[in-house]
Image (cartoon, rainbow, N blue to C red):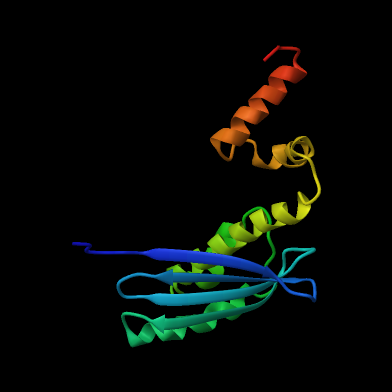
Length: 156
């Protein structure tokens, strides 16, 4: 018998006006929360944000969905996780909306990779993304190590 279940889901669509529409959904035994962000494709800036609390454990939780306006104007970049958590996850915010915002912006980062790698060979893709992804997971770490060994004249 399952005592607790949590599900998160994310999607990103390209809109015709140079924006990405990113949606996240958080659902568990007592919550169902949706967050939709419109993000400029060329800058990563959030231009609109809409949180929707469909199901929450207490009526006061609904008040936190108004904090979504604090996301507008924020951009992808270093320190974004803390900035997002401060914007919507503080004492009068909702940690679940903050988590959705962080996960959505991470999802958008990988969406950028999909745009950028269109038409590139695997070798070109590796060169383009290695510096960003090296150290982020086993595959990219090993690839980075091998590139550094090759650059130092070590045969792999």
